[in-house]
Amino acid sequence: MRSLSLLLISIVLFIYTSIEATPLDPSSFNSLRLWLDTSTIAATDGTANSNGEAISAWNDKTTSGNTVADNLTQGSSNNRPSLAIDAFGSGIHGVKFARSGDNGADANNDFLKKISPSYSFDANDSYTIFMVYQFSSLTPSTMDLLALQGGENDSRPSILVDVRSSHRASARIRNDNTLGGSNAINIVDSVSQESGSTHIFTIRSDGVNFSLFLDGLLVDSGVPNQDWSSGPVSHTILGGANNGTINGTDGTIGSVLIFNDDLGTSNQTGVEQFLQAQFNLETVPEPNSLWLAFLIGCVLWKKRIGSHHQSKF
Ligand SMILES: [Ca+2]
Ligand SMILES: [Ca+2]
Ligand SMILES: [Ca+2]
Image (cartoon, rainbow, N blue to C red; front, side):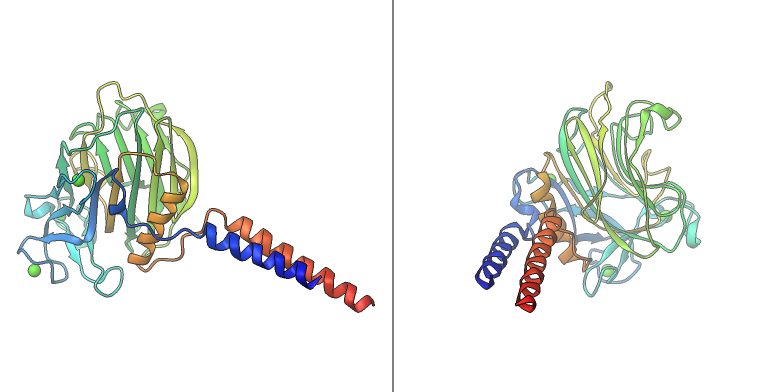
């Protein structure tokens, strides 16, 4: 009986060590197209070193695969976001976006953008997007954190990572219609979030459907991509949509990663664990953790049966 228990424990340990995903450095993937990292925030004065100073660019850190520097920039002072020193822990800074008129902000939404970057997506393309976002204490209405648009205005196709109706995470794919076209908008099921909390948003598309994950947990899947008849998504805007003028963000962004393929579950978890470690976040669950729990349960049950038999004799 004891040897059987030891065998089961050995099997569990073997399976555990073989399924435990290790953090994967995003730069190890050739499909990485954009990496806005906490280390590449560029202050207007040339040195990102004081809280609240204006950010004129967030530089692309991609060093493998596509090495084109698709830096997002902002030339207008009233539209520049600000440096949030130690937003995610000691030495881990973020970019704080203010929404027009909120919290004493000026009348201009803060945003960063890149027109016609080296990557673009069409309706039947695969892609994977990660984003680290910290909710503000504000209770906002609709905010578009990341807009990959077909043009600078709202009447073109978009992939949106956004927050709707007070701290609810969502993602949308929109076709050529404007916001008013109700059947043109796919809203992935939302999950309420606490103010001040930090989360990893992940969107994965296999070229047919897209899925939204929050902190590694699936929120919704099987949402069809739209038919972008007017051309691919080709503009990247952080902090608002429609060239940054609407649905402004009020919160802090720590990282944005865009890959031009579907990373798959295992690699997705690895990148999420990388971000979790970098930004001092809660553990991203293993996809096979339920199996592990089941196997541990089997061992405990087996041991209980064993001790029951012993007391009987
Ligand atoms: Ca400075
Ligand atoms: Ca790049
Ligand atoms: Ca502003």
